[in-house]
Image (cartoon, rainbow, N blue to C red; front, side, top):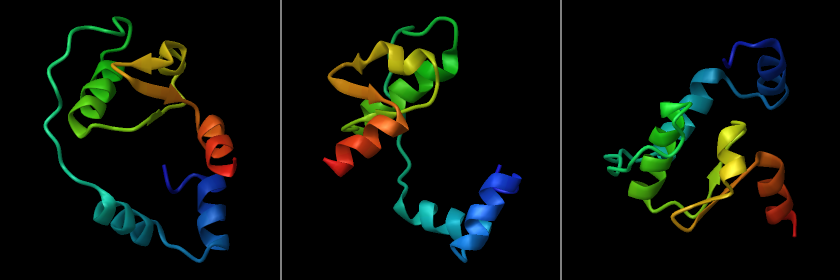
Length: 92
């Protein structure tokens, strides 16, 4: 994904290599065991995996571009928003 022209161009402008970006994210990440949850988004089990991980990590917010998750709006008290909504929250 980081080799896609649009992203590669942005990385070049920022003078960041894909490897540096991945290593930086890895330093911020922590491994968790997903919570056990029931089926929430039957059409896409990957969405349930995101929700299970958010629960286990005690996430403050889930940011997703997936069509089904933002339509959910809230899961177990965790807001589900788009990237644009997150930027708006940060800017305000």
